[in-house]
Length: 506
Image (cartoon, rainbow, N blue to C red):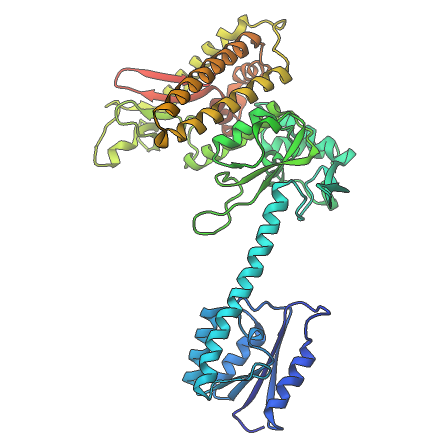
């Protein structure tokens, strides 16, 4: 075969009845060769949205090698649907004196009018592709906001059941009798302070629970389960949790009655990149059509615990003390970090403000890590001892009553916020109404808050009793367990020149 020759290029993303086949595309292109030599380049199952296609890449390499004199396609969109990709492709064609021909559209770059029409057509080809993408995205968003099952892996603990939702045939989750028992065990155990992800995993294996498809349990899998809101009985507390995390709540708070699970759809950041699994800002939160299986209090306890673990992991470089990430300087606000040396000091805390322009020296004297740890341990024991007066006979107002109060408060806050947004464009008469209405709403809100406080009676927390038991065996605990208990009890420890201040979480 003598070079250069014609290149016949054909592409088909999906083999459908209403789309022209690869073979028919090649037949159309052969007609343009008028019996001359040619080479075929075929990409099956590849989209035209980009040029990441093996046969296309090979053709471009042959063009650069001087083997091709003309590229022939059945239709323009067979080779590209992107203006940028098409422009780059044509630049290579012109550089190597290669002509481009569309057999059905009669574009021929050997003529000025053909070249002009070609560029116009590629603009419309991209517009068509983007319009199709927008329609698909809009349809997905609409269905997802109505709680439709949008495909993907079915979460462990559930199986699919056909149903009709808003007149549309779709699917919903129903509990798998065996797997859902494992889910309940995961939340029951992990909600207890002494249980780590690893301990939960070992307990699942010990009790004979199998991962789906005979897979192996791992801590990452359990962490994924604990973060998934598909299991929760969503009430006002769940609504407020996602609201505080910056998520987009599609359903009003009045729908959060403590029965349905939740779908958390993937979101995108400002650079259009998928958000990380742990990032909740901008995520769409939708009530699912299936019933939840884990009460909100247990789910939130586990969710906050996994969040604290991640924050602790990001700040505990070196993991040299269970207090790492908790100790801050009273002077400059910067964290104290554990430093080690071969001197008498051994492990000691040092203010990181010394590294910055403020040149803070913290307390101005050496703070031995072991001394501070012993002091904080004693303070934790004292704080827990104060809780001994709590009686087992004290009870808490019913979950439903408290949830209704929280829903009413959230709706009042929403109405007040709406009224405040109208202030800037309000005239004098409207301002009188807005002020009066806000006063009424604020008074009603205060009554609800008072009612909630009066109806809720403190009861002894099993967690705190379990923590007390753990502290009595402190020397036997791992560093990870010590950090977990510290996270539960302590918010921050401030170091002053002559003082140590502890802000408690209890």
